[in-house]
Amino acid sequence: MGRAYQNRKESMAKTAGAKTKVYSKYGRELYVCAKAGGADPDGNLALRGLLDRAKKAQVPAHVIDKALDKAKGGGGEDFAPARYEGFGPGGCMVIVDCLTDNPNRTFNDVRQCFTKTKAKIGIQGAVSHMFDHAAILAFNHDDEDTVLDALLTADVDVTDVESEDGKITVFTPPADYFKAKQALADGLAMTDFDVDEIQFLPRSTTAISGDDLILFEKFLDMLNELDDVQNIYHDAEY
Image (cartoon, rainbow, N blue to C red; front, side):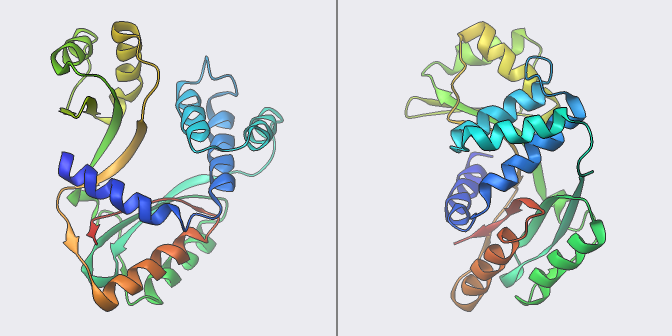
């Protein structure tokens, strides 16, 4: 799993430069999360984790406050999650997660990104079976056994634990994400994480180069320009 995660991190680094609307994307996700579970992070664990990630991404406080105030106000847009899967340039596998208030518009917009880059959108489940859905927590620590003991004591379902260069990376099923964070906070006083997220990790990779790579980067740019797109996962290896 570690190699797949490393490939994913490298891909994220290349994608991050194209996410010119990262603040609005976080704002939308915060609004949806707070509206669904309440705007108090002490009572909404999903919101608490999202706020941590937003702050790490240097989302300005006024963007965060605006999203939470909007959620407290009741009304507003009614966003719903939407997931699209398919094959990108060079045959790589792609998952696109969205939040939308108009599924027909979003599907058409995402489909155009596929068709304009010689890619092919598929049906639900077309490629997701080739990814592992995992919660990932990475932090500075040098004792893998102590970390594992804290997690198992709290009855966390640990998928994998990796230790390298003074850093521990914990992989768990998404359902155990909050339990794992709490176990690490209680057992190790660990509250600062270098990586704190839930994502799709490819089980293998597809090497792309040349014209396919150019098209793939165009494909990512087009998707990231869409307001409804929240996250893009893929197995492409540069």
